[in-house]
Length: 151
Image (cartoon, rainbow, N blue to C red; front, side, top):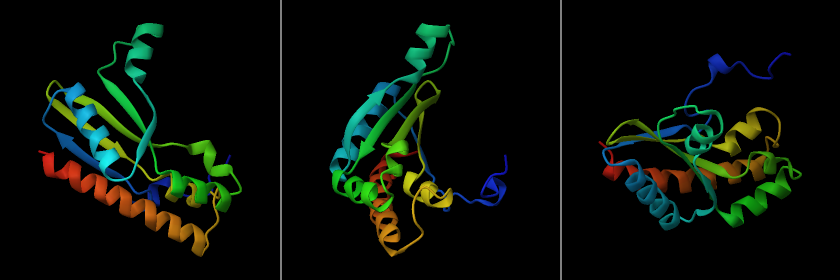
């Protein structure tokens, strides 16, 4: 299989990658990031702990790792129409919090809207560019709040 893009050529900006480090306990970081999401216009319709699941099901011994499935309903609605519903395969926009070490948490996000365009799941047109811009602004606002607390 040949990839439609060369992953080695992609930059953090190409995929909308954002990350920050928080000096706080894992559960506190989850609450903090959840509140930041809500304050910036993202709802959290889905959240779960892959580490708890894997530790329970396959005795993985994973450090805390948590996924907040963030969603802005009006942008999601536009994205479903513009992508002929394909973007739903990547929903929701995940914000991940993992423990690097006790008291130190990494917050990580990539833009599903940018990635969908790169792999051909979404059109490369003005309507999609507007969706990418809108989600980019929301994510910038979110990470500005997170960076204010970051170490």
